[in-house]
Image (cartoon, rainbow, N blue to C red):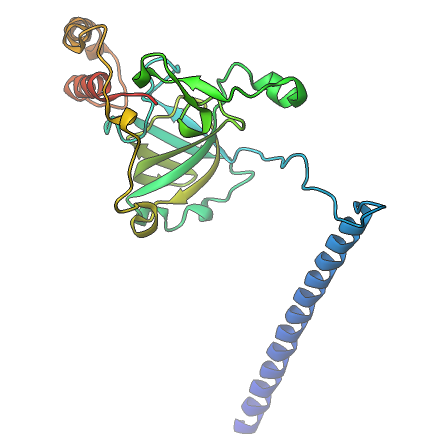
Length: 267
């Protein structure tokens, strides 16, 4: 009986070794096939006179992996920077057809994450994507902190960029299936999400980082936030008790609006 078990163990070991070798051979075959394909594409696109490889592809098609369900229904009133309003809530709902729930395993262990998304409400998107040749990039944009002065578009965080891609950091509150509950967001409802990455303090936070002097100058309010808060409080008294929202209580909603009014800024 002992000899039979020994023979069976050897048989299984040989079978495992054979399967490992087959997997390695298949992997080597895929690598060789990919290398051959790249060489063929490079030779096909080579310049006939100089033999130089063709330039990079004109575009890199991407599809959203999910959508934002946010407390901000329009661009107006949405914070212009992340973490400015800690009570601002949103949920990123991933598309199950593209991303399995297992892809989020481990994300809840991080306190914050990065969200890459599309500025889908830009008014020039159709022209930019359908006819890029006629879509002229504005090299400079007006900056509120400069009181109408202009700055290079790549030196600002304007949504009107050469490629309308946004990057925000948010606090991870919970992960549930295909959904990520976030706080401190600056994302409008319906925003298409391209990717999610964990925030790493040791590499994402740069010690000694500096900013230009014009970013340290605060703009003057044209309407006092206290007056807006007073008006809002009256409406809150009559309306908020009869509605449900992600802020749970009127006091939390009040604090959310107060933080939004006093803290938001733009550059």
